[in-house]
Amino acid sequence: MRSELGKVRGLGSAKSGTEHFWMQRVTAIANVPLVIFLVWFIISHVGSTRAAFITSIKHPLIAVGLLLALASFLYHMRLGLQVVIEDYVHGSAKFAALLINTFFAVILFATAAYAILKMSFGL
Amino acid sequence: MSGSKPKARPLSPHLQIYRPMLSMTMSIMHRITGVGLAVGMIGLVWWLTAASISDGYFDLVQGFFYHWFGRLVLFGFTWALMHHMLGGLRHFIWDTGRGFELTTVEWLVRANLIGSVLLTILIWVIGYGVRA
Image (cartoon, rainbow over all chains, first blue to last red; front, side, top):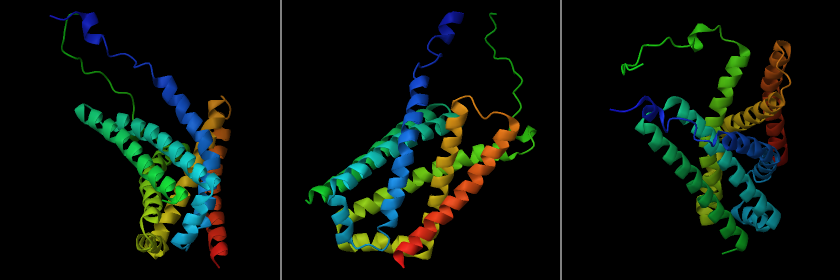
């Protein structure tokens, strides 16, 4: 026997919706200049040799710019994919998909950050 | 209210009920480009990682993106990026509570579409200009 109240308890809002919306907007604003920076960075390394590429990344502004770009893009990506998953995936698969989504974003960031720092510090 | 059997409730009308409109299509495109950009992030991280590993591996990845197929992927990525960015700016206008008049909505989604194509072409003209 479960009461009517017991059935609905815990089914309400997780109370984090506003933060999700807000951080999606904050990262979206940050993404605009960072996209311009990334497009410039990619265009200036069309057909570049590895030596020239690493020389650019040794500059602190380039390295920090790339780190910020990756952080903001991937944060925004995680929030966006989370909404897509919540719309189309249900039940226990949703839980798994949301976990994989978070791991995907974090692994991509850690991999990129390691590569950027390694080249920038010249190890 | 003691019945525990869930009643079959009417569903609200979904996509197939409506005549496809540009604003609806652009909303869907915003989501599709977003998912596409997520896949593109793997390419970006692949490129950066390759540069950190070795000359040979970096040349391999540079070669992939130099190949016509790689260029096609990059062109699609550029368009998705511009489309999603302009779509985001459109949402910022709507976030302020402005631009909801039907004529403005139509204008905004057209500007989004045309702007994304123009910016993509501009970026590629600059890209080819720098290389030449």
